[in-house]
Length: 261
Image 1 (cartoon, rainbow, N blue to C red):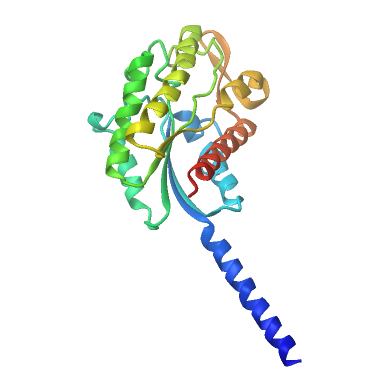
Image 2 (image 1 turned 180 degrees about the horizontal axis):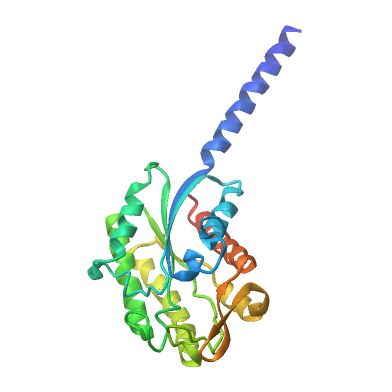
């Protein structure tokens, strides 16, 4: 009987150890989502609960390798990479303050960046049209500043999302803008590849699926909006926000598994 009690106690202690080790293996995250109206959740009934960053965070919280997740949504309607440049003395300061405001300093700091829609416009948004080589340089400038100011942080570039070629609201996009947007995608991939030498395991390509997904599901996952050239599709509806958020969440978790954090 005594030996049995000792064996049960030993098994219990081992179980506690294994459970504790498993819990410690989970990684806590602080995420700053950088983007435009799509990131913000424009047109949704309640962006605070329905925007893609919220969905992405809910996805991450359900993963066995992830612990607590705190986030800030720095999505701003109409903004381009030019608006987020440190030299602009604008929204970049808010990004810095948001990153510094996280209370858990041991959590991994992630900057999830999804910019390009407004950059691609023919006219309207600040700096548009932003040509592909300039887009590359703007993203690099933003990332360089973040990586230097926040050692240990990582930057994840999510590919921009498709929009209909007749998109023309306050800004003019159309087929020319859409073509330019598609030319941004290899620029992102090249930028991340270039960072492997200067900042290894700190800059990554995130989601690459959403562009084709929304092109295929524009009628079901976008909000129909009236513009100067008829009904256009630019902003995800509630169903689309869920899809996009899950794409981002999956991509972020894939990066975490890749770097083993």
